Image (cartoon, rainbow, N blue to C red; front, side):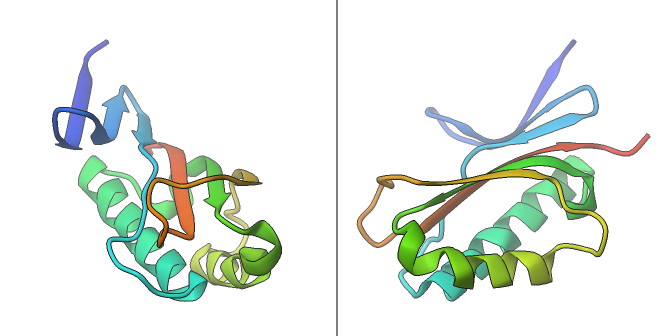
Length: 117
């Protein structure tokens, strides 16, 4: 099996394609902002990487969402997430609180998708 790497650098790839599987690294916002703005930015980055890999948000099988402050931000993030998903296409999902890479980052999301045949 060969691997195709997308949007990479010396430390990581934004996505790796293995057969029909598309693995995205954790996506974080580039800028500051509240949880709604950051979640929208991260989901747009996910859309772009999936498109480049030949997949779509409806192809996501699993997602992990990391929140800096789950008590403060879970409800607002969840509203953005739910609006982004197509009806009936919700993936398996885990949401946890975590210390994130930069102080201004409130959310990081990683997904695994399966490309359509």
